Image 1 (tube, rainbow, N blue to C red):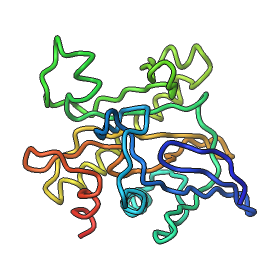
Image 2 (image 1 turned 180 degrees about the vertical axis):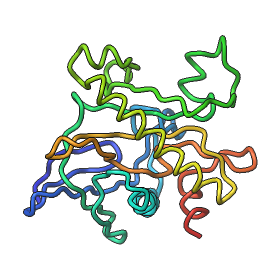
Image 3 (image 1 turned 90 degrees about the horizontal axis):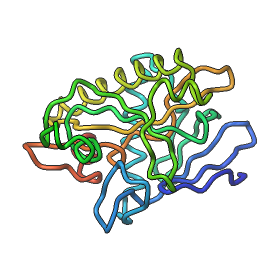
Image 4 (image 1 turned 135 degrees about the vertical axis):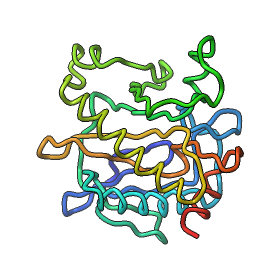
Length: 226
C-alpha cells in the first residue's frame, strides 16, 4: 500500500488495483476533550471508535446502495478497521456539507439571536470549506460557483443528494427511536465526473439524541446494530 493522506480520524492508502483503502482511527473531533462532529481538531481518543465507526459506516453505505445513492464504498474489513473505496477527487481542497434537522452546535452559536436550541429545521443544508486555519468558514452557492470550486448545477445536485442521504439515515435512526439533529457529509467526483458520497457515515459525524439525551458515538453503533 502507498500512503496518500494522513487525516484526523482516518488515513488513506493507494492500492495496486487503483482503488483506495481507508484506515479508521480511534480519534474523534472535538475541543477540550468534548466530542463535537463540527469541530476541525481532534478532541479526544475513544478506544473502539475506529471499529464502531467503520461498522456503522458500512451499514449506512449498504442502505444507501439499496436506494441507488452514488457512493465511493466498495467493501469493509471490520477487524482490520479498513474500508476499500473507489478513487475520488474533492471539490477545491475539500468541502463539508451539513444537513440540519435541529438548531444546535455552530448553527445555534451563529444564529442564537433568532434561533432557539433544538428548534426544528427542515433539512437545512450548509456548506463549509475544509480550512482549519480559518475555522471552516461557511460558503454560499454563488461564491462556490464564482470561485470555481463547484458549479451552480453541481451545487444543486450536492444539496439534493445531501437531503436524500440525511433523510434515509434519519429514518434508520428513527426506527431505533433516535432523533437525528444534524449530520456532516463529504462529497467528491469519481473518474467519470459523477458526484458521489465519500468519507464515512458514523457517530463521529452526526449528533443523535434518544429520549432527549445525546447518544455517544460508541453507544450509537451498539444501538443501531444490536
